[in-house]
Structures are given as C-alpha cells and as structure tokens.
Length: 497
Ligand SMILES: Cc1cc2nc3c(=O)[nH]c(=O)nc-3n(C[C@H](O)[C@H](O)[C@H](O)COP(=O)(O)OP(=O)(O)OC[C@H]3O[C@@H](n4cnc5c(N)ncnc54)[C@H](O)[C@@H]3O)c2cc1C
Ligand code: FES
Image 1 (cartoon, protein in one colour):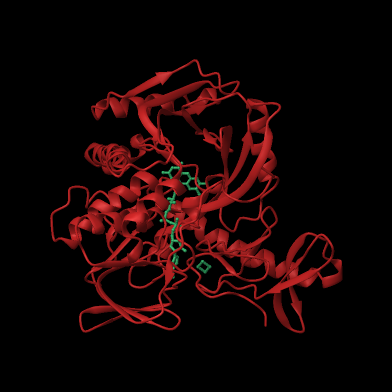
Image 2 (cartoon, rainbow, N blue to C red; image 1 turned 90 degrees about the vertical axis):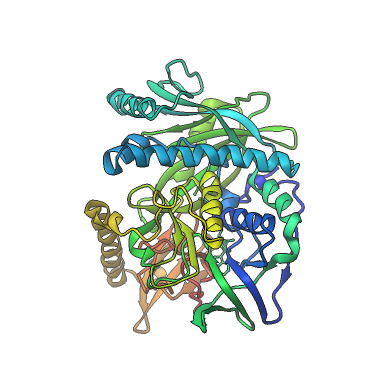
C-alpha cells in the first residue's frame, strides 16, 4: 500500500455500481444524498415497503462517510454535562438513550442482514493530558451516573499514549468498516438507487415536490434532504445554525501491534485513535487536529498526526492522509425532522457534529415515524426547527467574525501580490486585468485559476495549503484547484472558462 489520499475503508472493496437517472420519475418518497444518513433512512423505507428512490450527485458514500474514523459510540466528547447544563437532565438522558439504542439497533441490523463489515465491540475512551481537566471528567462522570448510566468508568492506567492524566470509558461500544456496511446493505434495495444524479433545484407544486436534475425531474409526495449540509437554504436557515469543521486523518501500518478500544482526547489539538484490520494488516487511524473549514492557520496538520502515530508505533509505515469535514451545530445536538414549519412533507437530517453513525440511525427512526404519522420519542430532543442555538451569540459571533476576517485578509493580499511573486505550491487571491482571481501555483510553477467567490452565498474563499483546496469560511464548501466542487452546500463549480 502506498501513501495516498484514498480512504483506508476502500481497500479491496468492489465499488457497487448504480444506474444514473435518465428519465422523469414519480415516487412516494425521494431521498437526496447517499451517505450514511440517506442509506440508513433508505433501509428503513425498504423494510416498511415504502415506494422510494435515493439519488446521489456522485457515487454513493463517497463523501464524509467514507473518510470518517467509523467509531460507533454514544460517547460524543464530554457532551452530557454540557447538554444537562443547557437543556436539563431529561434532554441529556434522552440524547444518551437515543444513541445507546442506535448502537444496539446498528448491531442488530448488521446481524439480521448478515453484513460483513468488520464490526468489533470495544470500549470508547475519552482522555486528557491536562491536569486541570480533572474537574471536567468528574463532572461528566457524575452527570452520567445521575442519568442512571452504569456502563461508564473513570480509568487511570492507559498505556496507549504517554502522559494520559485522566480518562472516562463507555463500555460495549463498537467500530466497523462503513464502506463494507453501505455496499452490503444497499444490495437489498439497489434498484432504488441512482448515482450521478444531482438535485439542482427543488420546487413545490400541487402538494408535491419536484426535484430537478440536469435533464430530468423527480416528482414525489415526500422529500428527505440527507445531503450532509442542506442544499436548500430557505426557509430552514440551517446555514446560520451550523458551520463545518475539518479534521485531518493519517493511517499507518503498525505491524504486530494492535489495540481494540477507541480513543479521543479533549485537549487541543484533538487526537482520535482506533485500529482496523485491513487485508490482514493492523492499521492505526489517527484523526483530529481539527479546525473550522476555511481557517487559514493550517500549519502542518498531517505532521502532527504522523508524530502521534510514531509515538504509538515508532516503526510504523504511513499509508494514507486525508481530510474531511462535518456539519457542527451551535448546541452540539443534531437537527433531525421537519425541514421547517412552512414546508410540509419535507424532512432534514444534518449537523451530526462528527458522530454520524449513531445519529443516522436516530434520524432513520425519527423520519420514518414522521412519514408514517406516528409519534416519535426523540423528536423534540433533536428538533430540527429549533432556532435557540443561534442564541449562542459567542459561537455565532465567532463564525461571522471568521468570515469577515477572511474577506479582509484576502483583500489585503490582492494589493500586495502579483502573479510572478507567488511562491510555488501556494494559493492567493489576486487582481488580474481588474478581476479578482483565485490563483494556485503548483510545485512546478504551473498556474491554476478559479473564481474566488463561493458559489453558495458568495463568501470569499481561502486557500487550504495542506490539501490544496479552496475552502469557504462561511458554511464550509470546498473546491479543488480546478474549481470543481468537493463539498456542499455549493452546487456550482467555480471554473474560469
Ligand atoms: C474526520 C471525521 C471523522 C469522523 N469519525 C466519526 C466516527 O468515528 N464516528 C461517527 O459516528 N461519526 C464520525 N464522523 C461523522 C460522520 O462521518 C458524518 O457525520 C457522516 O458520515 C455524515 O453522513 P451524511 O450521510 O450526512 O453525509 P455524507 O457522507 O457526506 O453524504 C452526503 C451525500 O449527499 C450527496 N449530495 C450532496 N448534495 C447533493 C445533491 N445536490 N444531489 C444529490 N446528492 C447530493 C453527496 O454526494 C454525498 O454522497 C466523522 C467525521 C469526520 C469529519
Ligand atoms: S458555503 Fe456558504 S457561502 Fe460558501
């Protein structure tokens, strides 16, 4: 295996092929988006004999899901004490129970459908190297105990990394290979899936939704947006209730070394650890070192993670390096349910805060119950239409400030730089023939130009020198050096013809 930016989950997997939509079609339910969220919802519709189709603008499971570290856990950082403080003990308890049930349900689906996806039961451990964070760990533990959760333990002797001071363990969590899971489960309903079918526009007419693709339309009674960042801005206003955060990942062959449990720290920079068996090799996956998408301070993101891999296994062989991003809500709770109170029969699932495997199962249950007009237990916990997160003024201000800063920084650079002065392997925004242009000069001096404004809501892009991408600081769209979209919500390329 050579070093590359492929996901480790793709090794030796025969990608399933699905057809492209080439005619107009009517269906009861249309799901837009074939990541883990869309696929788990599709599975529920299939099990309930509902007439549906799922479309993806690319290949299914080719975005965030494919690049995750694929831990299946209810331990989402030190979240429970925070939720309890913000929304009360009952909401924290509901969040925990929804996630614990989701773990069990995912295990049951894997067993019932006989899915070979390297599922391993393991403990999930959160740790800190910081003496001053003992109180945070203690608070989380006390809160979990107060909620009646018994599968939790404060642990002290972890040998995985030096200097771990305190840690807290959730027992009986899990990890798996998400690509194996998706390609196996979609065999059950492959006729319902259309790839390379981009939803470009959504309209409502005569109580139906019409989804327009490049050449065709889909007419449906009920529509589910599972596109990661919603492709529709108004009236849901998710773009002011969320931002995107990028994490970096390095994988390494660690020879005979292996450990079963999964790890995540609460310090900065973040470190996430797990192992996986791929082609009989023990692979260490080190993730984290995250930053808000569009941030410009990206110094040596991969080098840090590589140094952690080397601490764990000094002779390891580095295999892959990639980055990906997830949608972050301002109160740490995802948005699942009705898109808005003005759009009947339109549903949304987003804002997974980097915990999509349990959350997508929760989403599949809530949305299924909604489609069947049934009461659903966790609906209010994940209420998608809530606006109170934007009252988190500090975080909202941080989001806005970063966007404004990025615009000012780039304008400043426009005055200073001229094309020939750009160092190789660097991206800049320049004024060329009176037009602003995003310019990347590669290692050999070759120039690549793009429109430097995001095609979503026109924020000025920043250059990510770790991944050589143009990133949007507002809602996290990303584009390659040619101007092709890598990540939504933008849905139009930024090529210069
Ligand atoms: C580094 C990292 C590590 C993570 N690790 C974990 C972990 O260990 N455990 C965990 O639970 N979670 C983890 N997560 C979070 C998890 O990976 C995500 O929450 C989850 O994969 C998101 O799934 P999704 O289906 O919403 O999005 P995606 O997987 O991005 O799928 C969205 C799909 O929608 C399609 N689409 C978009 N726009 C359109 C359109 N206009 N028309 C048609 N299709 C469209 C896309 O092509 C894509 O296939 C991690 C996240 C990151 C960033
Ligand atoms: S992602 Fe919204 S403006 Fe760029």
